[in-house]
Length: 162
Image (cartoon, rainbow, N blue to C red; front, top):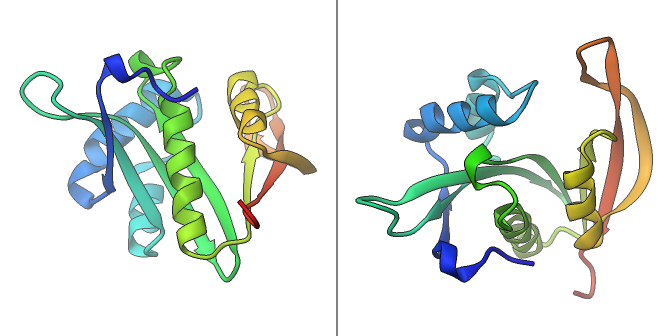
């Protein structure tokens, strides 16, 4: 399901350096092991597809509710990061961001989209499964964890013929 329209319209725009304070704040509040500011800076420098999701017309100005990072190379896309503001989670915004990134990958003529997800992240796994991602592998010890490392499930989505 997409976000409930009564919550407001979501708009996507390119992420810029001026967004990084907010992006890092959302990331830090949402994840136990967030990306560092430098990682986002590197993605912007590398010209990755870096996007902001905003709710339009909330209070005096638009409200950033999440972000997504996508790398497209040749005919493959790699969803590197997606995050929804903690207070906005569970309302369908994650699905909206993933859908937008899938559309961006298709526009860049990618045939397959890949991502990694923690086995312990049941909500994200359910979202990815619902849009058609399927597990194709495991990266052992891919993610930091409180004790040791956690594997990363490698998922893929065919973008051909959609």
